[in-house]
Image (cartoon, rainbow over all chains, first blue to last red):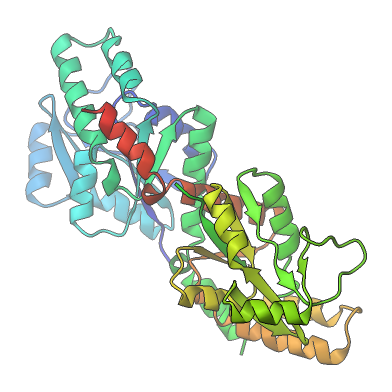
Length: 202
Length: 202
């Protein structure tokens, strides 16, 4: 038996980080996949916990060695998911959560990896765009890029297995938890139990 | 949009009725499918609530008219699921729960009906058989038939989509609720929402 891989995406500003933090807090069997990046650590960020902070050279070497499940370049920094991190987590019977953007999720899908794809959607596009515009931390160009990215991400929602419409935090937590629990109940994830029952049943 | 059909089976004595009663109590969108039967009402049972009580003639007429989604004959009484009851519930946007035995579930599967199949399994076969043997309400022949039926039902568990291993009542309720919630989040059950987002996204 090995763990289940969950790939979760959602546009910037949708509230994904808060939702996932809560889901992870409530479930010991879940493991959050720590991404690698070339961007500078922010105050309080720890290497190996928030990100694996790599130099540009280290990152590009790993790209060449095909060490990434997916990777991308945003605002001239690299971000990527290390294959080994995911593989080790699954082998340890953890259910691994990948919090990656739609582009990354599409890369994973193309590799025919057995995963469960969840999209966290805003209830209303216009409300999300309003929120992005009101962010004071970013300049107008970055905001424009984010809005374009949001629109293109939303248009790919139907490639996912599940959509969680973020109406309230509690409801979204409950829905993601429900998806996680139900995947653990899938027949194909209980082959050991079924074998045991069949033996008892002789 | 229409509701989702859940077909739930599990061997006699596994605790299915208690679990489903709790699941239904906590979720307004679920509708329990009331079966039709030719057996006599027991004390306190209401027609249309516990069962639709039909005469043998009425039941056989309905079989001929193909009014049943599935039906069977146990201990010389008929039991069946009325197509119209299910159809009306789904059209009313309810998620309908069919509590039927494995034989009935196989009949529904063969009809290629879009449904989610859940099997409630005992944690241990020998414990279940012990419980069945200790039931004082039934004679030995009936108990023997039930044990044989249990074994044959368990051997068909892998035809289902999900298995809920009944370890504790609360855990089983949470798992069935999780499966129900997650099905509501499936992309194919949110086509109206996706269309709306795509319109907003223009």
